[in-house]
Amino acid sequence: MNSDLQDKLALSQQKRLMNASLVVAVLLLGLKIWAAEMTKSSALFSDAAESVVHLVAVCIAVAALRLAHKPADEEHQFGHDKAAFLSAGFEGAMISTAALFIFYESGRQIFQGPKVEHLWLGSLISLVALAINLILSILLLHTGKKTKSPVLLANGHHVMADVITSVAVLFALALVYFTGWPWWDPIVAMLAGANILKTGIGLVRKSLSHLMDAAEPETEQRIRACLDALKQEAAFTYHHLRHRHSGHTHWVELHIVVADDMNIHDAHEIATMVEGKVAALLEPYGRIITHLEPRSAEEHDEFWEGRRF
Image (cartoon, rainbow, N blue to C red; front, side, top):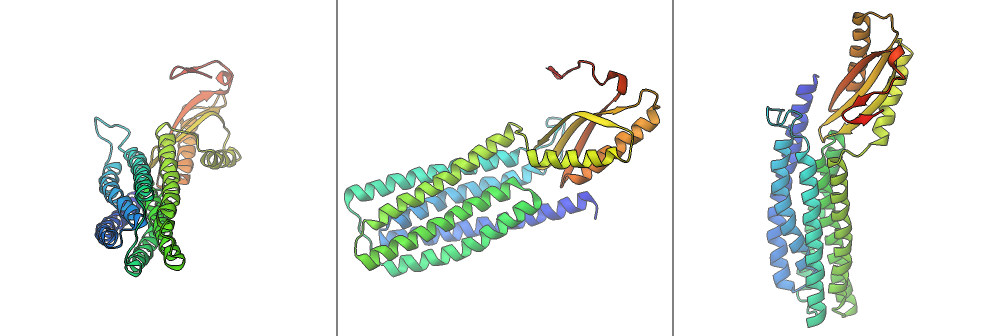
């Protein structure tokens, strides 16, 4: 299967999952708002608030997924990949905002005095939401890792945060029911909010790291292992290796050093072989840029993009 067809199939699968996530977000939001109004539970109200944020984030993620896979054009010559990281960062910010709102609502409940009603109704709805979101989050995270999609991974973590919130809601309602002490409701809501805030901050930090082209040591080790193996097959060495991941495409730059008396045709054959092997290593797409130089120039000082080597 060629890479273009493989990419189209992966994109189609990602779109289906994100559309499913959107439908689930709408349905569960309606259920949670109704349950929060019926029970007066701050934990359920916090869960509903998080779902509002989730719905907005999913809408943006669906748009970002389509944009990230648009081909390069005159205005964006390296493609639109980084839209995926922007979407993931936005989703992290939205999750963090929801956590802060949960803290506010829980604090308000503590100050005014908690009052929880219709515990069985709230518990049933939270259990339904938990089951649906757990299945969806597993699918999103599995497919996100398989297709290396920042959008799906961010949404999967968001849905998993919703699962944890539902677990906290069930735990809070159970404590209220068995102890008769309504203060468990806002206290557990605050604990759930803290976990959601941690998830949100983590997504923002990871997104910013990728937007700033942070190094990926594991990927670089794989590239170096591939190059070192190729050195046993062809007469070359390499240096000035750099790698960055833009969300959909891995970009690699390196200098290939060959013997001074090697003709340009043979040197080009080596460079083409190296580019092909490294590109095949990096899925779904690898883009390799090589610079050929003779052995006698290997130790010379060079100026490259304003950086001295």
